[in-house]
Length: 176
Image 1 (cartoon, rainbow, N blue to C red):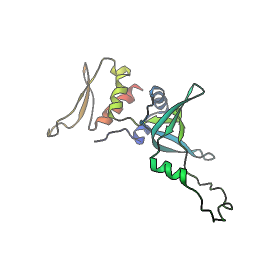
Image 2: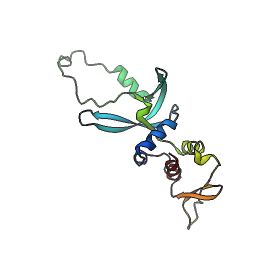
Image 3: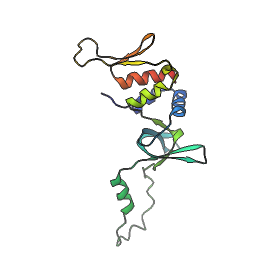
Image 4: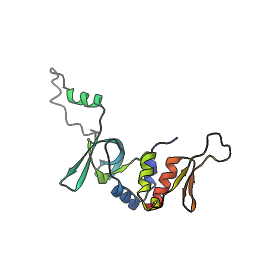
């Protein structure tokens, strides 16, 4: 079963839905997120980079900065990488223009969350759709007829889907 929404799910949102999602998202340490990283300024080409939030900081009291969590092995390797002492060509090499690492810091406004099922439920509860409460119907494993998850409000069934994460995200899309 799908546990998280994906970058492809986020691409189905309109620009205004993405802005609303970003403005309502309060990032926390260990959240999964995706950043839009510029790969070519001249051609205006952007690439999506999935990462885990390692730290959150405020810049000038208004901008939220997300620091990417790195594996300990990556950090040790980067800190202790030294060029060989007898390598005379190291100084003569030109700057590598194909350097791909976008860095560890991203502006929150350039990122979107990749919520897990629990975060989707919590987010939905805090929206207009969750004000009156809702219930999630989970089908039994051995039921041969109905294999869909359902979302019901006090008036009845609101939505139905084969995947719980998809069901919750579809409901969130309607309120963004």
